[in-house]
Length: 64
Image 1: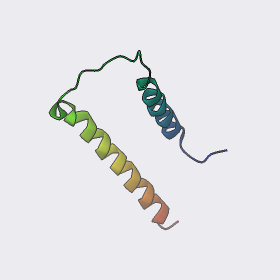
Image 2: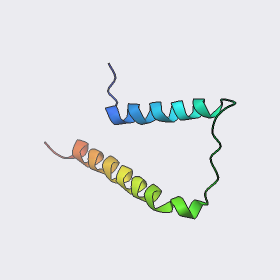
Image 3: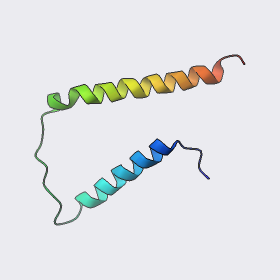
């Protein structure tokens, strides 16, 4: 049994399947989007992930 959160396992599996599927000869071609168009959601996910890590760290070191 693993101690990883279920969401981490699901995301890792989705990324692995996407990478494996992109190596197929009949894989769809996705047009390149400029980096500025993707900035909002990426920054939001980064802030959420950082806040989650800090919350867990604070919970672990807080006195019981």
